[in-house]
Image 1 (tube, helix red, strand yellow):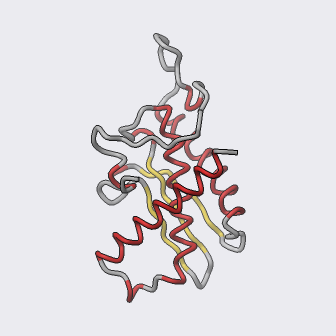
Image 2 (tube, one colour):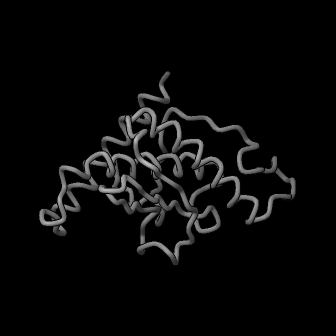
Image 3 (cartoon, helix red, strand yellow):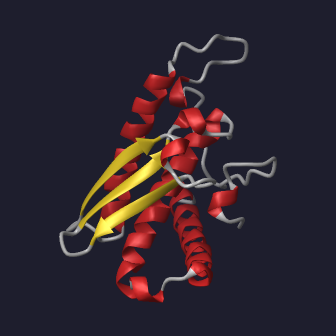
Length: 164
């Protein structure tokens, strides 16, 4: 599976398998119809969707004792070529996940929700691994390995979930 950070740009956008979203997701118009959904409405829908997926996956990954919140962020508020991030405080057991605003996606509208869920699960897997990865162990090479591993775990979890 290509690295998560490569999914936002370029013509080779991977498609997560096993998921069918209804055409009305994100207020998608039918062929030839004008879109009545504003960018602000899509941002609000993304926030609601991300919060729902956070609750589901936080439960599944047994992170119930964490106070985790989601924020929809513009691309300018994230590192270049990223779709989200997570910042946590292990002592307070708090975390903030930021997911990319639908306005800034370079994916077809039908793929945005799937990608937002991928980002939420991806960041939760980072949180799950946090006790194993102290700041002293982190360097560029280990971060690449961590991203690769987190991508594969996330992909496996979502494929399993979507095959039910």
